[in-house]
Length: 218
Image (cartoon, rainbow, N blue to C red; front, side, top):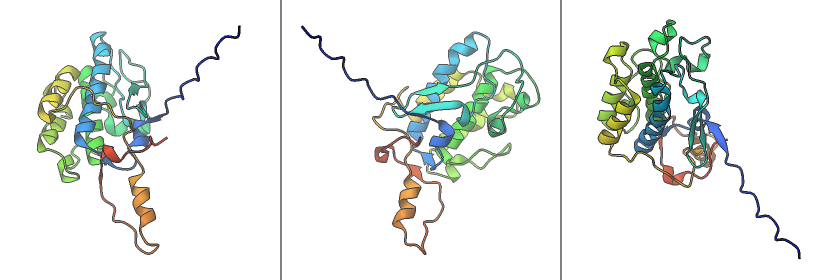
């Protein structure tokens, strides 16, 4: 008697760096908050072990088509040995200066990543313009970003657990938001294709509604 054929394998889940996925602009702030909360939950056990990442950035985080996030860099116990150029805008100033990586340094990085998500712009310099001035986001998120990215570690939110709790309360979001689709879609490419050859759409930091997402930007 012949045995039943094995079930077909599930297609592999596609993944991209968060940096590449965000290249089309800002995302809905509630979804952005949910992603940062998920990263906080991933980082918490590492901090409990006395380690820290130090160089969290959109380039060091993978996101899959079902919105699962993975931190791709290895946590360390001391200072960073190497610093990638694309991560510099997200690394705490004391870590850039050669100090030991810390939980508060990772809080800084997560605040800068949140800024990138909701504004669509890279947080350059010590005092980038408020995210709310670049996209439609609540002012309370400006306050949280400011509290996470203070130049002084002692003035920052002290842990990823507290950051996650603040985000859940102020943005009124659940710890994890699932969606059947990926976070970013080539909205700008679609707009450009719809424009006439002599008329191109104005460059703005559009919020990409997650309901319009069709495919992960791989």
